Length: 110
Length: 118
Image (tube, rainbow over all chains, first blue to last red; front, side):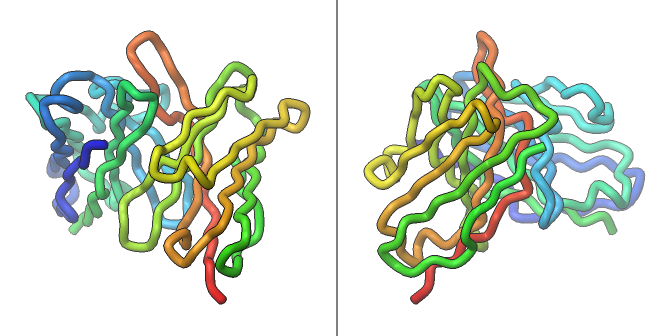
C-alpha cells in the first residue's frame, strides 16, 4: 500500500485561497484519477467535497476545487470562510479495491 | 444517514462487533466500507462488503475481520476478533460509490469510539 503525504497544517485569512497537497507516487496518484477529498469537523461525519480529482458533488460550493499534477493531487479552497476551519484528508482508491488515506491537514482560518 | 453503534469498551482478546444503520440513502447495490482512525494517526481502511455479501478486506486485518449485511434492516456489521489495545480507534462506516473509473466514499457516519483496555 502507498502512503499519501499531506501537510499537517495550513492556515489562511478570510477571503484568501489555500491549497492542500496530497503526494503519492507514480504508481498510484500519478497513474490514476482516483483521488477524493473530505472535510471533517471533529465529532461529525466526514463529508465528500471532491471526487475523481476534480469533480464536486452536488451541493458543494465552487470555492472548493481539485487538481492533480504528476504524483500530487491538490485541494484549493478559495474565498476562505471561518466555517472552512476543519480537517481535510485525501483518499486514493487503488486497483486492488482498497482505499488509502492521507494523514490529514488541519486548516486554520486566522 | 449512517449511524455506527456497538460497545465502546472491550477487553483484550474480545471480539469487536459494530453495526452501521443506514437511513435516507440508497442501500442496495452498493458497497459499504469500514474504516478506523487511532488517535493521532491516519485513517485505515478495514474492508468493504457489497449488499450481496461479497467482501474485500485490508490484508493487514483480513485474518481477524468479518463483515455481514442485513438488507431487510439496511444494516452492515463489522466483527474484529482478538482485539488488543492497538485496535483502539474511532470506527467509521461509509457508502462506497463506484463508476467505470473507480470508487469513492460518498456518505459517512460520524464514527464510534472503541477502546480496548483491561
